[in-house]
Length: 163
Image (cartoon, rainbow, N blue to C red; front, side):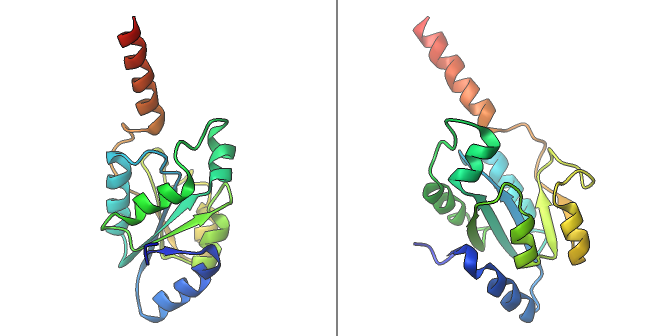
């Protein structure tokens, strides 16, 4: 297992240690079902917001709640390993909640990063970052890449090839 992968129970201690070291903590989260260029650009943008990037990956249960039956496509262990393999990522943690509120309260990052499908005003956890004295930043490229679109293209091509 990668040393970048930490347990949910270790998040509070990680945040305390990084703050004691004077590090600016950036946090990003997502399902990361099929790692694609949009994810990479999002995480690179999130890394640029701080000294350390911690990435929260939704558990299999949370992905099912968010995306519906048949999801996730890859189990959480594989998704976490893929995210941890990226050079811009310092730490990865699985979290079981549907929103990142709890993990934000435990980690207490300086910056919460969300993708361009959000605005700073409509980020669901914005009130938590306000309470913590942190900021929300929108990073990455325009949301022109998605797992849903990749799956639709695969189905379209398979259907075309069969016809």
